[in-house]
Length: 413
Image 1 (spheres, rainbow, N blue to C red):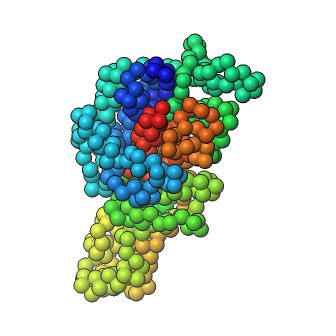
Image 2: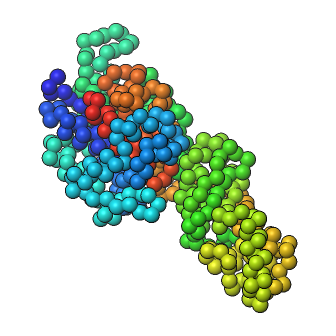
Image 3: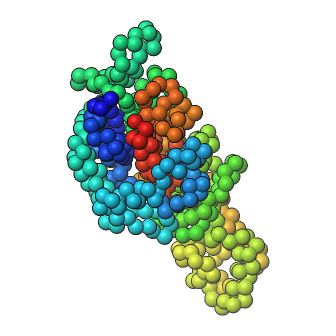
């Protein structure tokens, strides 16, 4: 069919990327993006603090998949088709240069998400892709009426609020974690893995160790959730007005999305502020007791942590800040070592993080062919991005999953 009509539901990252790649490959196709709001590419705009963390410089596909709590197995083959290097090259060909930061995150060199948005809008205009804003899809009717056995209708019917119905030869659903869309898809026979937040910060209330420390952070901390099956997570740890955040905490929240939801976000979290073992830390403290005998413990720390945090941990070990190092007992140093490496904080809930727009849950992955991104339930129905039960840790990985699934869907239509 030369003049196929393809409708993409959702004007976000995956929807736009699918539309552009689809139209480039099939110039005769009629491609439309339907967005229910009046804002396009909203998550692209706010990602990475407005800089747009487009992907990550992890180019080993097997290593790349390890950043996905949900979707690791399914994305392995998908990333062999289109991975971060391919995305970087795709952007480069369209005049968008990228850069890599120390932690592997990749951004446009402009440090401005508008660069990515402008690129996508320019491509859609050049390719004459139809974009309809304020277009709320109410119902999807498959080509064959499965209830009545009516095979006269050979196209998808899309019912839109306060607008005429549309027809399409194929649909791509790129609606993200939208309950309304999931309901439409369950009506068609798909099943949804229970959705819960995936990226969130931890509320820690009334803990004197964190009082007045909002904004203080360490670059190399370790966090873990007690009495869970979750692994420890390494990276930056940030004290906020409400508790603890930054990459180490967000990674823990991603991997623990379901288990921590089951606990109603009430659990004990361990924090190692210096990445040292208790034994080695105690050894270091004892060595500095000899070296800094006449100095007050509150004035100098042997570890690379902010002095304000050091003072709080010293006080938590029940040591007066004016105490000379020479006066410290082994018991006091052991308590301080434990505060530095094994501090336990009582998490009382979760808080919205500026990047908390990732959800654990979505279309069951067993119902999708990841070689094509086509539904196994109904033909000519494709999925991309967060509408699927796929999510990743922070760092550009969620966008990469969207680019990859969108590209595969486009190629196969």
